[in-house]
Image (tube, rainbow, N blue to C red; front, side, top):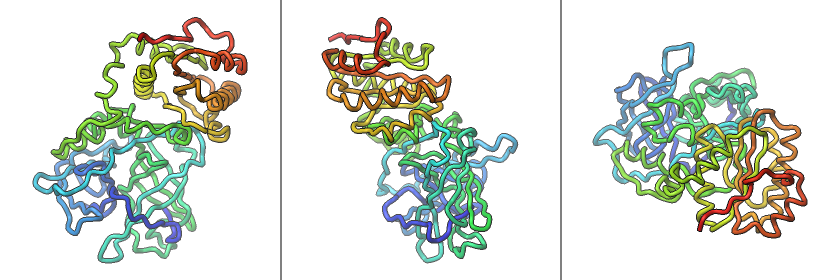
Length: 407
């Protein structure tokens, strides 16, 4: 793998990277105060003890290897590990970072940029930085593995002149603030470095990993490439942080976006199940308009996004002001997509831009990957009639397209 000193950017405020010292020394990533993601090559088998040093702490802490996996299909040895703080070695003063947001790739673009936490042990205090890289095209078709090309030679490579940079096995791979993998292998060639990583998508398919992290399976994955066009709606994965705290013997109260917040929009609600069935129908494109109180429509929409994400879909609430260039990513998304445009009666420009992008996708995008558009508004007034006149996609809609929510 590779990265010249000039491509390592100092980072002063990221609390998650940690120094892991077991069978070998390397990097880990703090999922929560008592749970660390790293490489199994550093830790050994389950039940073993390793030393973990947080960047802000003066002394190491004792962690236990709680899980290892998933292993390359052709090899028995695991390549990823989860470490839990050993009993009596969890500092009460340790501040819990925000719950982790997990990500996955949903296009076959070869220019997805990533960041990798880097560690140097040259001085008395470990120094940290970020390596920049891009995902290779093979990452798009191998959901279990990510191949990352770096800008220069790897830290510690013979031609890098950066022998002080430690091995990067166990380092987290992030893109647009989403955790998408953990480094398991490094390599270098003259002037070029690369990393291989196990994807978050592969990790969350493992029942043991999912139970320990509380990541609620594949539904926890957000689409990396869609982040520029999606609105941030609190923390939809609150259970991730709370479960990790439970693993460390702590407790985190429920917050916005947690499972308790939208309990009344669950499967017992016939309107919710009808929306899920609508998404699953055959057809490359479908639109549904929900009219009624904003809070009721919003709860249904959030529930539907979570339900379809758990089924392998991508999507969320469309951000205001997304440009044609931003929305062009829809043409490349290779998985089913659900987009929500709330308060559509006030967002004519956003609706127009979205429909233009959808038109491009239906004519040039991937076959067999449906897109569903859910609009919410208090009523279907003049704005709706005007939109149906402007866009051919909204003409000749089937019965049931407009759904009035009960008061």
